[in-house]
Image 1: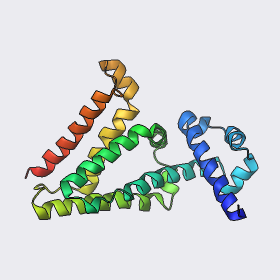
Image 2: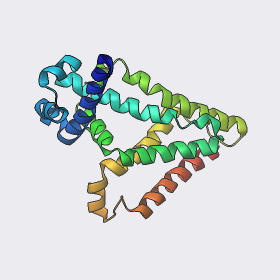
Image 3: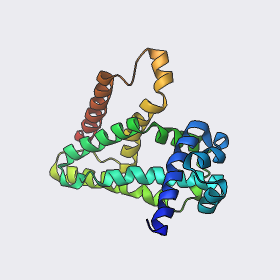
Image 4: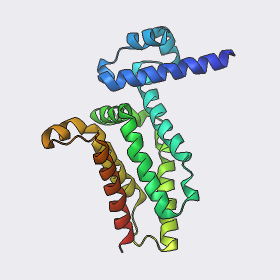
Length: 207
């Protein structure tokens, strides 16, 4: 393996382990020593790649958002009719959040910090432009075809979809305890996914 490839692999391995460490323990509780031990590297090497613990944390955030956007790009939603494209986008968001609770915890942690680290990123805003452009294109095609009647701000719609999917994961334990519902139950999952899809489409179909 070439030196450059080894360096990239080391960096990638550090990011994956750091994601678990930060998601489990938060920024203040995460230990760089633990990350170094699990990746068989050293604190010195981690600081060489990322500058500081905060730099590593920000790199983890950027890597997490890049991951979800990369998978979204592979959906090829522009090749589907607008109704099916919207269903597919919701289906993907729902399943991705469910399968990646660490991503949800990282976002929650950064909200606790009032996005102070995220604001230092030069790439995060650009990374999230693609999903808004995707939604905007689906809405435009739906309005052109007559499938959608209502004009909706794409960022508002993104927030509507994301908030439901996010809440199901972030509040699973508290909500489940209060109301006696297992949000991980397959029947509940399917019902909630269908509820979100039909609610969004009903909104878009009304003038």
